[in-house]
Image (cartoon, rainbow, N blue to C red):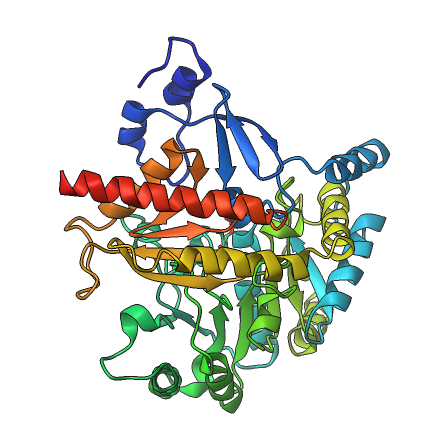
Length: 456
Ligand code: PMP
């Protein structure tokens, strides 16, 4: 680690346990400390510039220097820096945001409930579902369906629904009754000779059989990202959602759309539910809702969910759930401003247009010897790295190839994220075509460099 004693880097190593980081390795390699941001770029403590091709954590939709968000936060800080939403109290920004979210939802929604992170929104959804089942006099209806590769967060309940090994390994999570099904990942899960349509049919049959096996009256809901993000940017095959939703409807099972990554323009529609024609009962929103300038998240619920909660809390006196900072006035004001900018600046259409360039550019790398598959839509994409295209295999240690290419990208001034051996790209919605070209050229160079290193 090339850090001087008492530098911010040295103090970081001394005092900071990082999220999602190999703690032991961190002591050797030290941190990359980011000092400032401008548009799609961030600059580290030494002045080196990076194209932030992940928007931080799939989240800074408006880029790193949107003054209108700073002004909205400042105005609200000066007027009312804090108030809560417990015991019938509230404030104007949260009332405005609730109205905005419910009225902009792509399917009829009834109410918005406010939280601070994606995990909290997902935990809240699970608690509401259990509360609802009890309210309906069906206490046995509590099981939840998720898919492999799902990412729904890291609080205990959300981590239980997440289906990535790192989120379970060594935590001894208290996992409620969760049914895990195949991810709609044709490249890895499709059988030889199977078409994408046959694959989608098979997964719907798997869902039907799993519900039958569990007992249809015991299954409450399916949680799903419209397009799976952290699990590898998995775009489901064309007829998948239509077939899955038909099975859920047959058994009266709720659908919770986890829009934490897809929401607010990422897939070329305002919501992933529009892109894939999902009709959810609940929608979890976060990340781009505030461009992540401040923590914010929300859960939208329809009448099927709100109705029983209304009746039950009326009977027992209160709906005993809520967070001190949920619906925070500054977060609400920044979220309203973010949504206003996305709408007024036409950033959803822009995500479609510039996103088409990103998809075409990355697909031009498909012939590279280290590229197994390029996938994605609009401004979210992944490159699955392999060393053997036929066998679809990478290096013997999973994640090693991903880490090599990712390190070469970072050295060249591009921040991506390795999801085992797939590289993710999720740039701010404001990225220009020239910056997309810069990104694609950088990825090509990093692939070439890694290929040479492997040969050596
Ligand atoms: N759901 C999805 C789809 C996510 O991608 C994430 C975070 N990457 C979460 C939930 C959890 O959000 P948070 O990290 O804010 O708790």
